[in-house]
Length: 314
Image (cartoon, rainbow, N blue to C red; front, side, top):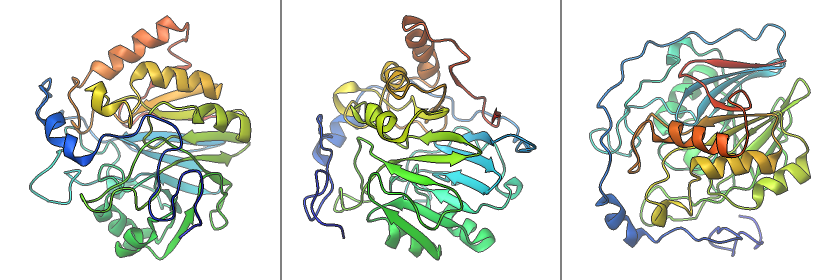
């Protein structure tokens, strides 16, 4: 484990700026908050991933925080999640409303996985096991996650601290800070680090935020790593604010993160797949449109992709 730092006390990781996430004892109160009902299932056809052709990168939205990123150096998958439930249990826990927009068997060979943290909707060991058997990819992840990843059969794992650059990946990848927390059980809270990633492909910088509350870190990413051509920012799972504001941005905060990053384009993610919180399924899209208009940002500059749709960076 790494020496103590501004986000590690020698035993557990922490956020260097407020607010702090609520304790585990607050979870029952949050679960009892009144929820806007979601549909049980949205039946949408799967899509074939778009070809890269001459683009610097092609980014395809699979669902939740899973993106397929085609580059000349190989195919990248972010926070791969193909299971039916975001849970350690097959019969309990948040269930998918939408299937993955690109079928697993239609994924091209994956050379690199970017794994932002260990929560079940981002780190699914069943999916990692399938990818390990099929593709034997490299996994780049924050400190403290390697043992979990290796338990899924992944052989090549590189752990990074914030601001460190990967040595094993086929293209430049830097781990960036996030304002969040980690846990797989009630007993391992913050034993592993969380983060986002900046990768460079064909001269373009792509930022994948993972999960994060709003914090000054977005300005730091821009200052330290340069202009961002495409930011992939979470916009869902943000209500009630008394609980979620310390771990997830709402759409207005995601727009502010876009401005802090000075991103040329941003794409919203982390919505419309699992009902993790109380807001309605379409509320993130409505609130994003409202925040965009309030800040004079066009729908081409910050938008969402339909599930299975792709964006080409030329």
